[in-house]
Image (tube, rainbow, N blue to C red; front, side):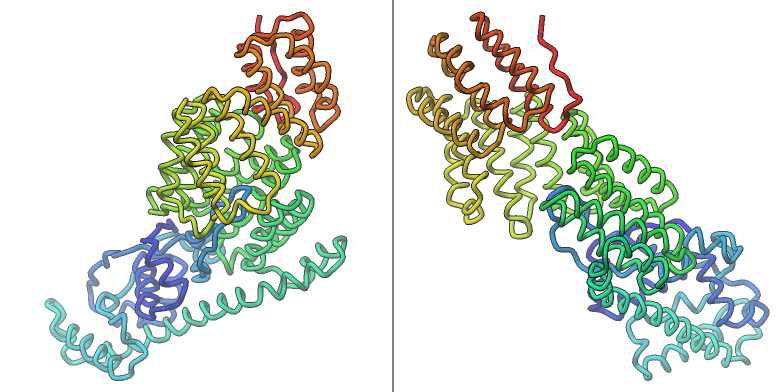
Length: 545
């Protein structure tokens, strides 16, 4: 069965259960789609074709049923914003696996004409139901080309009652799904209280843990844990994979289960990326892509996977490739009218391009993303984006505008209490002073900041601040200071968390300083390399000829 995506407003309305009429319309529209699996229920409940009119007009699908994961949140490393609960409409028992189980081809069967006239907002009202039956009977009596109908008004009553039974069965399935989502947090707590070595056996033995809602919650927890530590994120993602492997395709549908398996492997890839296991991350993401081929083709699932691939490319130093991959993600969020996630993606793309040496493109993209971003959902992300914008504005020579942005960031409530954020804002203040020609202030700030970064054990930040000081000395013609800086502070930097290839680049700088061969181009090349290779020890530094 092909799956489509209705308007987001309809999705959220149904997910909150605010309108019975919307629920009924969705279910009826799906039945109109000719789904072979749901047709089995229709065949069981409705009168046989022989008792109906000789020719039944085909129904036109007004709005197809949504993919089951249309409300899911794409994920990056940062915690995802709140999202409404997504009722899994694949509980209608349709999907590739269900079709195989029932031996029916998609689109088989038919739906009788009265379905097109079923009142959608009055099914719970007995009086409305009676009026619906009467209307259906009148339609049948007055239908041209059906001379046998005037004497058989009871046929319309039989069909109307059959539709009531269909809705009752579907509502029962939706109730089960709601109960499953309600039980998921309790099951999660119960599962995580078990010893790690026992959790797999528990999932395998107890069907109550083989739940789509529990799997979804485990993956959410994995994403949240990634901001605190990669080990827990990996363990939760692996547990999510185990639960996904036990999901019943006959109940949820094959496409839904493949979507969930793909998501679980993608989250494992993201957790491995956070642990700097790039080879393992690539392997997991490739497997996630292969699973997605048998999924629902939900564009939001595709966006989630591409977003995680872009994060991996960015950490590997392939910044331009990461930005290019995000173009498709932007298009998807544009298509589904998800402005907040489109804003997040534009910000990420701008940062990747800015760090790759294209600050002007960053200055254009980041404000576009901020304009779409819901800052109340992700205030920390909004603050980080404004800091990045200030950074790249200064790179472009817009010092006053950069200072204004930085001052605004300092006044933000989210700026307090984070030592690393404070250090980065102080670093930006130093760079703005340098770009503005306030040499003495810049030198004082950078010197103090260099010692603070070393004391905090932040080797890459310390190395980049040292290179900023070197650039300042070059601008002032103090070449002798460069050698002393390399001799006094570089050993302390090399003793920190700097991988071998990055250390080789800094040693190349030290050798150039000893021979008085340091140039602005060399400093720029080493700084650009350190920004790219910080998380990827396999990315080697090539000294320009």
